[in-house]
Image (tube, rainbow, N blue to C red; front, side, top):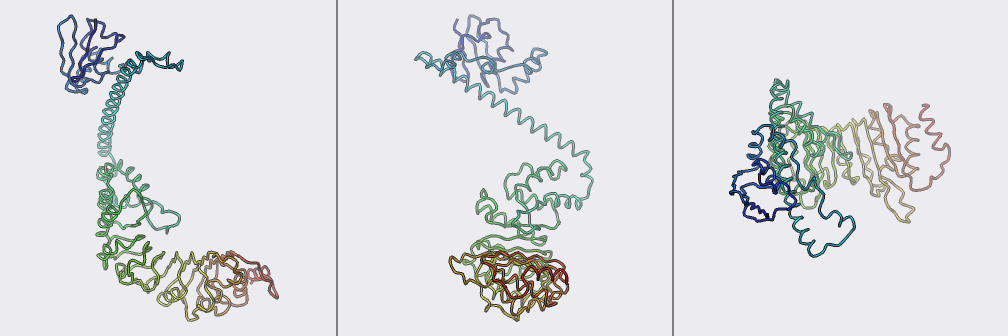
Amino acid sequence: MSKEIWIQGIECQAAANIDILKDGNVSCYTIFETLLVFGISRYWHLESQQPTIKVLLPNRKVMRQTLMSKGSESSDFDNTMKLWLTNNPSPFHDLISANGIASAKDTSLINDYLQRVHREIQCIEAILKEVQEQKIHLQSIANSHLALISSFCKFPPEVLAIIFQHTITIPPPRNKSPWLPGSMTCIYATLCMLGGICCTWRRKEECENPVSLLKIMLDRSHDADLSIGHSSSIDDTIDNQTLRALVECLLPSSHRWKNASIDTGGDSKDLYEQIQGHLPLLERLELCFMYPFTVSWKYFRAFEDAPRLWELALGKGLSPVQDFPLPWSQITCLYINHHIMPGDLYAVFSITLDLQLLRLSKQDEEVYSSTWDPAATLPSLEDISIGLFTAEFDDDVNHGEDLFYDFLYHSQSLFDQASRLTCLDIALHMVDSTYFLFDALVTTEILPQLQSLKVVCIASEAYHEKEGDDLGEIVAKLFSS
């Protein structure tokens, strides 16, 4: 006899080969199983020669709990129940194997079968979602109980803040200064790890909003020193509005900043004005601006008052760099990571008389010897590294001079004032300049304290032979002297 099932008002023909519906004496609990297979969540009724039976099923969870309370039969259901379509071959298996074409009659049956497949998929997805929610709930219970016996809970807040700070300290990318923070992706991973240590840190694991995450990090680290980084291109998934909100959230903590990297456009200039005079701990600062021509940086005084600042890294967008309001007289370590005009460089020398370490890179413009200022001196310099990029000059064979050619060959005034220099690392375009450098080191005592020397020659022209000793003999004399 034909039997029909109504599920949430939808009428569907029961499959003839479902044994459970052929049995007029089927138990109520077995029917529950069948209904669960079909994803019934409200009610059903079965028409047969027997009186109609109606069972109210508030939801799948209640039904499962009811079955589990009925002893071994329901326990067998919970452990061994398998979905019907999952464990039975398709009635169209032979047609599929033969790569056949469905007839008009088969097409209708296949559509009915596909509907049942999709219903079963939905049922499985619902079960998976429920199980996943139960897993998350149980993990939360486990974490909260582990926290009760964790020794970390006995630590004072000051110690926990230090642990938190060092755990999220991630190395930065290779092209950044070593004291800058790493990527937020890596930092977030370590934050999730911290969530298993102490219940006071666990809330941040459920936080996906970058601003909320930053607020939690600032709160959990208490008064610990901070290394902060602001870059407009740090993450393509963060829009400008969110990035601005992150900066607004970060600025009130400027009194905790120890290291800072600012790589952005002029749109944030107004935000940083509020930190002027509130940088008592700042020691290292990196500045780089993407759109330098949109802002007059000589009026950007956010970092002018930083009593502990001693290390400075400057990128593009700050020319003329000497006009940027900074505590130049305090700087002892200077990194210039973008091309700087010689006139600007010498102006920086004149206001950084205590400079001990100088790193110049990406000096890729053609500069002539007449630009050298013999008055530029660095009396406290101990460590210098100069990197020059080979420029493109087409067929011009007279490009000649590099940035420090005249300094090496003529004035030598920088060396004359650098009697404390212990480390020299320099890259030159010309073999001739390299020759003059070694010649100066051998024939004079301009660097009596020199202990480390690295010279890289990126020669773009043939070496012109010199009268007297060749370069190899000069280097040999240098090591024997």
